[in-house]
Length: 484
Image (cartoon, rainbow, N blue to C red; front, side):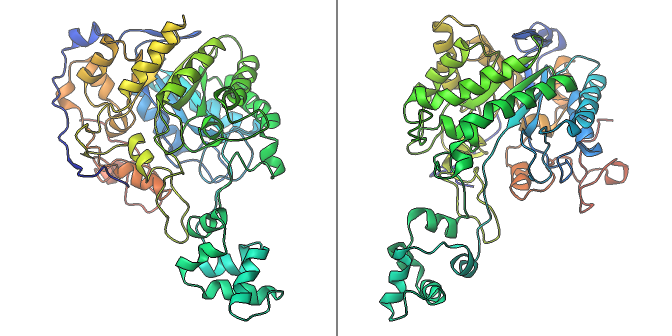
């Protein structure tokens, strides 16, 4: 992963854990409202992808245990991982694209209800994504995948080969030093060679990309309706990071069909998806979204546009806004041959999941200032939509200060909750000194990048003999052990 220049290891913030009485009277452990849904407290576990579904996207025992274990700590809300709205192959990620997934999702809802004694509200994150392929060997790309054009034939002419002979053209390109390839390959062809092919929302020459505005509202709405049928308390539309809806909002979206270019054009499809999703679910189901407070890339949007997006969503009746930052393909590092590009390896990826190897700002709460600006804009427009912030939250004092100063309304923590799923319960009971604290080295993120079942280095090798489920290689437990 990219690191800021001059980064050094930063110490974890000192934690002065509250007594049970102080925690009980705090803002973080006070109720909150997500539209029609009441949270018992303002603690929130954002969506994390654990790679535990079947290859067909179905709920497994490992999925049930993953969410059930978080629910035992009784947070205010848990958001289930990014769940695909299309019925397409996507590996061991959950899907909700057809009714055949309903039984498994109902079991997931029931597991969380039971494990949390009914205290935790459960939402599901709905995602759409475009095609991305692994980085190919140069020979394979140039010999098989490259669609020949006239500029490519010039490479054959340059070495005295027949430009009308396709094999001679490919052989000429393959013989070129890497630094000479830009003479003959355009930027997208070079990207496909060096990073792997990746679709963009601006590829409107492809019919299925041009048709996204016609298809996505119904796909999201159908998924939202299934989520309500399965018993989820709400849905979170995934408008963040490197995926389809975030790409529609992106400053790099220059579609000229009314769905790109200006802020209003970039907002058009996300607002249409929101309207369709709200219309598809009963009134007791919350509909919100997760989007970026700052893309953190060249040519991307910043906080000012994010404020305008948030106000537009609030005017459209959204029930909550969950904020993240960065995590884009645009600045991702070149993957190894045979690997796909990973959107958390560049500067924007660092801003999404910063580590203890940081600049002077440190990795803790880097999204708070942007969240505060967005909340002020929403409140200034007359809306009380709750703003949810996360990113490097590791102490009670951090969360309480965010709420006290009005920077956000709900505070989430992903990595710290993975390190200790019981940490909210421990704070609530005045046992903060027993919390297993995340070290923010991103061991978990490294597993995610390799598409391995995500665990935490602080507990995944402990008491393996008594672990209910182990990783595919049998070397790691899949859920955190309970304290003695």
